[in-house]
Length: 206
Image (cartoon, helix red, strand yellow):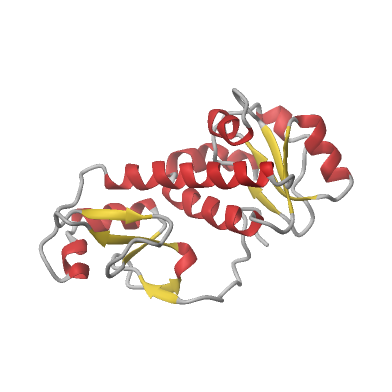
């Protein structure tokens, strides 16, 4: 796997074409949209809303291009209303989805937070994913390393991780293998593509 998360060699699952880039790729790397009752484009982050899906790569540039060039109307084959803040709304919903999935992992005993607990999981090789807040101390974060053949998530804020773990703020977290872990990694990677600025800030961790 890459430091960012899921294996870049993964190719399983149904594929769809991005209306902005023209590339065909697995659905887990795309954002699905549908046309709402009032012909408004609606993000379908969970991929469960009824209607014909319109897909855009989980990438801020691709999303902004789709909005600017009015590609949603072409994809829907009809005039549609596109919110001006669509890309920001996608980012917000993706972040919420990642937080919710981590919270579910915590409740099932597959996630821990706090430097000492995370360090213990890493030493015992219990951790499959290392999570660190983008706004945490760089010096503190370098003391922990991504699990061998594991994944790293470093573009959530300490407040967002706090929500996931039921605390005010969290800097260090870890996920065990199995359960929802693969979904957390995939959703976090979608968020990474859309959350351009925070990824740039976290680049120093790699």
